[in-house]
Length: 411
Image 1 (cartoon, rainbow, N blue to C red):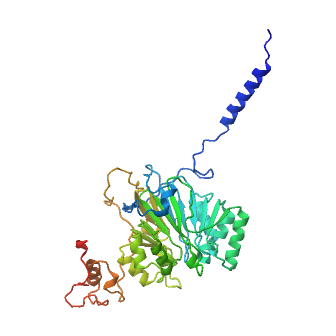
Image 2: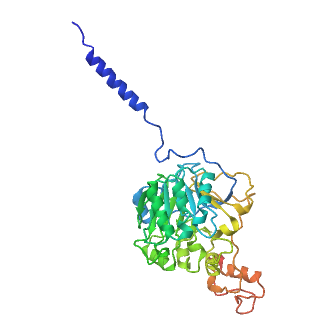
Image 3: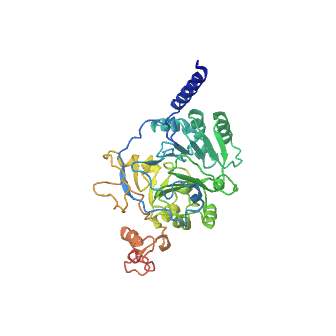
């Protein structure tokens, strides 16, 4: 009986189509952008210490439902970098995720736009997965016009405050021309790019009275490391965040409003309890930033302060457990030092043979009082450095400063 070849031919062609379709699938890793460059380079950096700021179950707040970074241990060697670019009087920070995603927060002044594009090229960035406009002021948003016009951008996050300047209008035009997704952002908005990293906006709930008051506040969590970015929020907005219950300890704080006296209240700093803070500020700027008032509060809170006007570009790298800080003004010629590997037991901070950049010294001017210090030892250090006691810390004239304060040894 003759056998028809037609069914066999159809079956063969169907099988061949399925095989070719499977071969056409790429082997890309979820969350890794196709435009990313090669392996990240390990810069010569200095280990500062192992972070102790692990978010607790009861302070994680609205981050918990995201199922992202907060309670999972990152794999060894997966490094996240936060690079505070030296833009003069303004702000711009690049976050490079472990899966090579890139997030840019602000772009500094408009005149520095071409330099920001060059910075991104130098850092191996050929596309931005997200751009965050903390607020529309020119010293934060201006440089983004050139960036968005020159580099492919997937999404732009903005409060949408109706700012009427030419710079902001040109920026919105650049966003529209780029084809990027525009997200009018409020509390609870999430940037989901890497399964190990949580990025969530914790402010504003609604627009404030001005651009500064409407600044976006972004919280980042990666393993035990956390960072808080606050734009130019002032003390009143900090009080709103304190009342909201959304603040919990972080490792790194972008100091608000370039170290203005009207930001970084003692209560705000206490709630965040950062180990290190970065002030983005221009050298000898006309605003007097950072102010003595802000520096005094930072010193009293025991925060190590780094400043772009004195130390240039500042890079903080973390594997989710320890962190490193590198500054342009710290020599930069040290041997490459690996980040500490994740371990079940706590590791002691690595310090031997490694010289860390000098933090901002405790202010010693004549405008301090005992309320500016957390312990008697801190006040005593200032008194010892200034025997003439211009701050009147030794009220009894017995050589002991601020005797009403508790001793650090009693903590």
